[in-house]
Length: 581
Ligand code: HC1
Ligand code: SF4
Image 1 (spheres, rainbow, N blue to C red):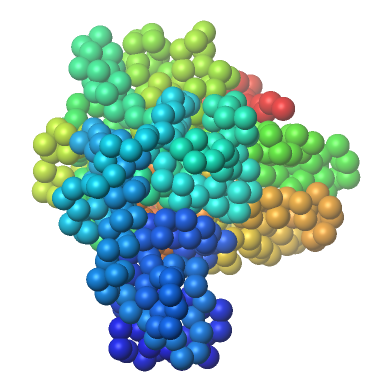
Image 2 (image 1 turned 180 degrees about the horizontal axis):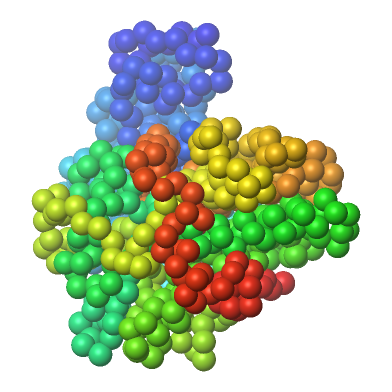
């Protein structure tokens, strides 16, 4: 152990700790900006580029960045001297001298760590106000907007993209005022290998990386008397939306969310969870079909089957694993299954043409914006899902409409595309999709009802997990990865035959699964918030009267009335897709 003193208080920390770690142990709050440590992931941003966290170390001439300076025996640290305060203030002035002053209209206003620090330091003037400024053109993709004039070169996005996600879309280029974090050759994000996972947005401290905001388009659709506006809400949204209205992380606000959407003027308030149940019908059927043929000796059949509901993961394997293109399930994601059914079955039921209907999705995710813009998810140029907005954008809409969210009554979703089971709601956390699939596949394979539908061995937050699940005479070997770096590790091991063969693998691009999506309320690095959201989804599952997708009465009726059978011709046409190299 290392013994040192901070602000006159002794503390012992393990070898390898920084001064910042030691201060945390004493609950001494040293301000930081570029630093970020996402516990449970490889994300520790050690750039030490901002120098906001400097402290005085007795016996040293220079101030030391506490996030990158190892604690050593006998150190005497002071975190709050006038020299330290002056240095931090100067750093802030320099950062702000090359930062736009459009805070009032910035998407990050109210959530900006730079703004918070400026307020905390009590800056009232800037000695360097009229110095040189960087000038970049905004890069606007279907999912993400990059305004590099707001970049403070903290490199968090780069660490996230390269070390956690292993995508490698971003790196620091150029020097001086031209220094910027960018895709190679300064190409637009849309033309790069970016997956639109949105995790760089989730960790950006300023407004340099934000979601493409479609709330005004939604408001315009709601105001158009010629449109029927249908909304679907993703599983993970209900476990996080409350945070925007002062609720503790992990508070479920499903009923209030439905009431808020109705108050906003949506004509039909439905649930993506309905389509998650539908996804299980198709995906679990496809899995059993492949498994049966495999057991019968059909060597053309590919196992493990990989889940395909996460669009960032789909884009990742299209770029990075073109040789494995026939391994993922062909089932569309619940978002897209919902859109396809809403604009066929439901539009027909209402007696309206598909272009009179506007389907809006509320998602915890930025890649869903990109997914609904993919050409294959449209008919004659009319998309199955017209607009996808994030949990954060929905919160803005509710605030803008002066809705008193906390005092809303709990309301239900509408029929028939609002009914769902517990299996659907756990889609929103890592391991949930495969647990939902196992609940149905096990009953179909054995013809017997499960004694217990909870498969605890599939749960948890370890980045790569595996479990063995007995089903009749067979033991299913299941793999799970969340975060694209973990997905890469698992897939490489599968491709190189370094692991016992899996039957099925679930992959979600974001750490924690959708509950940790790039469109959720900012968690500022506190991964325990993501864990609480996951627990909330398991609670909702436990409280549901029906917990297996194939028992959802609305789904059964949909097959009887309209689709025929899982993997049948109509289901194949509406609910399955293909991938592109
Ligand atoms: Fe997800 Fe999914 S679970 S991908 O994480 O399969 O975004 O919540 O909506 O489509 O249902 C996201 C969440 C979401 C889809 C479902
Ligand atoms: Fe990298 Fe994901 Fe950001 Fe794209 S969205 S740049 S893949 S972190």
